Image (tube, rainbow, N blue to C red; front, top):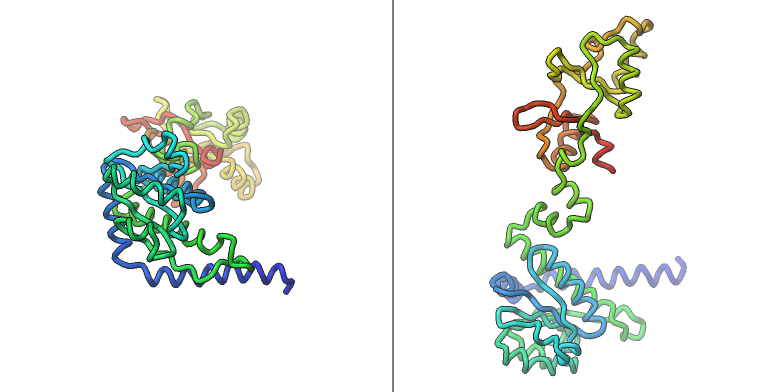
Length: 315
């Protein structure tokens, strides 16, 4: 194995072992931290310098997007006005590998003056930070992956995963659901599926034909409709069935003479429907469960108002 590949593999192994060891050592302090954050009336303010600050930004972002209001404050900027962002209703999460980071230490008296609870994530249990914090989440870092044991690698991974662990525990405690996640991510694929309704993307005037429409007419209607399907309607425009391009292909395989075939012989009667105010996720789930590629959208009076296709969900 090339040296670089072996080095890379060792990084994965070393950090993996450290994470497994950390999982076994989580204690009541972790549960107390979860309880403290959940009980916070304001927001969780996350602070850290250098690489710990980068990890802190990620932790704050993860917490905020999973139901625990949170934001990041740079410790140095806190001394130039940003301390005003922290209120007495907040709690503070401080990250420092050594527990002796100067900017973090200088911040502690001001946090004590505000009377806000402080949670520390540090690798040094006997540090200044750990001694002042209300709760300490100790990360056990036997060694950095750096050949010189200097560059933050294992330590930052441990802090990041500790933050993820807090976020996931809080999600469970708050009974945070996919719909809650979607409301915080309206621009993502999950947000689109859960927040966008069938009526928002359905085709409102799908092609239609009568029960007695011949094969050629059906093909012409579907060609001009450009949806790969047609609804079959009765005399009062009620939906009686649906014909897809797949139905036409099967008819061509099974019948030598196509000209005499009519819509009622080709259609799937009583097509599957979905309420027009249902989320796209419900349409996707129903199509997958029934192995179909289109559904008829209906209004509260159970009247057909359009069609939605599998392709529309992928747009």
